[in-house]
Image 1: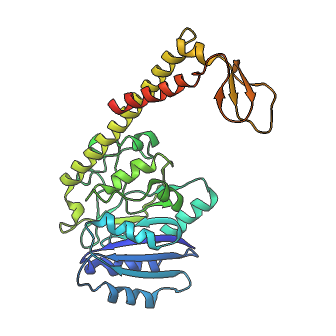
Image 2: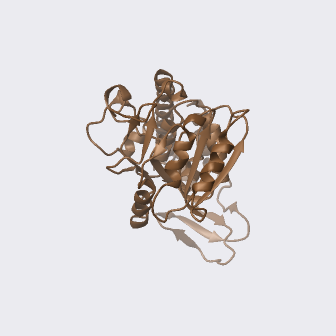
Image 3: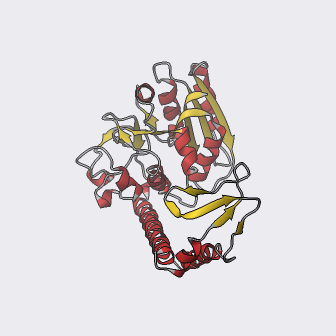
Length: 333
């Protein structure tokens, strides 16, 4: 298994693909990488460009693969590519973009020294179409004046420039294979803000560590899909609203269960007075009466089968009634 798995979604970006590939094969150190180019175009020069990179690359460190198939957007292409690579640390990068020297060694060293780190990003860095550096603040959307990210803020979808919590530049962000599998990859129903959505779901499982150096550059030019910032923000707002709805629903469901449980099992309730009678439970290896911790008023006797002991037959009925009521209330919510 390689140290890094890198997917490059490609669609008629031959002008810059060579630069992206060279930024990978020129990484110094001992780190290894599997690079997969997922081509969504009908006709492409990508294979020719890849062949040239293969000739230059150290074959003991770098493996390349290429596939071409129509896709509905970059998220679908990236998901396909991730399914084809095996590596400890994953990322994707646009065919327009490139890594800085030393990025792989810095990330690998960090993760080796601190195995608990599952998700890491560098400082944002923007370049013009010709590769000249651009300011990473103001019009670019990176409004942060402090560094580091709140895991709770990411989980709640607050990592948008307009909310003043700061963008995460996807180019130069790396994560473990296990975190990727836990979140289930990208939501390919999103055309632009699929990385924004990914960060909020990753924050459920890992803490983002920011390193005070840029790992990669984002090339800003009018032809790229991500130049549609208003469209990106519209999708990001939708994602944030969905997060809010999920949290509201989870809070409501928790309250319903808590209130229903309290009402059914208060010490004065009919249900509790029925349940506190004795049960006969099937415990094949023991036939002596026993009690459970915290339920000293209940007496359990082992026997074959599960049935209520006398007096009365309907001791389990309140539990079934509770389950039905909770289910109905949750469906209404």
